[in-house]
Length: 82
Image (cartoon, rainbow, N blue to C red):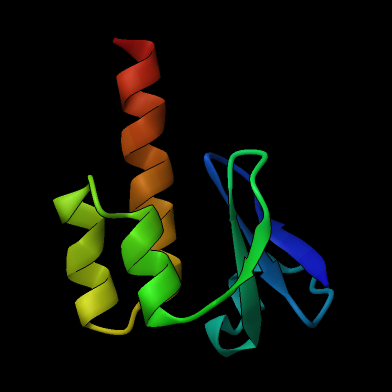
């Protein structure tokens, strides 16, 4: 597995892609909240991780898992900066 997103939620892919503009979200296989266990990517695991963030959960319902994790990370970054 290769880490493709680093933040409060780390995202892992089965492909190593250096060009983020050409990244295919369909290659995501796992997620990790902070230093917790790496968990298989599925809707249930994401709902568990994102339960407190309704903005990010909206994207899970649309099956846009990369956007959901990105939104969560952005919101966490904003909260830290306040």
